[in-house]
Image (cartoon, rainbow, N blue to C red; front, side):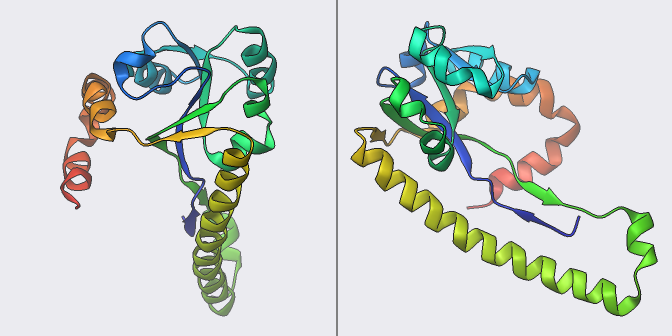
Length: 185
């Protein structure tokens, strides 16, 4: 990997106020169609529903789902707030880095100077993107608030603790790495 970009953390946006995992009981929340993510939502108390992202607006509008999860720029640009999602619970339950890579075959075709430039520019792009991302989140958060979306600070530890069985199920091969990450303050 040459670097990674920040695609933001994913939080819940819903039609009803969510402050704790108990508030998710009975709520259908759109998740990416991945067993890990579905299990995460189910452990947090909701009912994880796999659904294509293009279907979310109408599913929110018609009540097929009660919410979804993503970051503020995505919530705004997809107009999900206009479909009834008026609460944004800042759970930050998923962080999915956007990694940029180059195949070893292509890398080996580059000269040493070209490889050095790719590394240099990858690092610069990574740093610049993080600055731009933070600005984007602030801008779209302000736009969502202006549109009537209520941002809700939650006790993230409650959601984290609720997902312990998911980490146990999927994280066993990475137990040492998980412990090191959890030790970072």
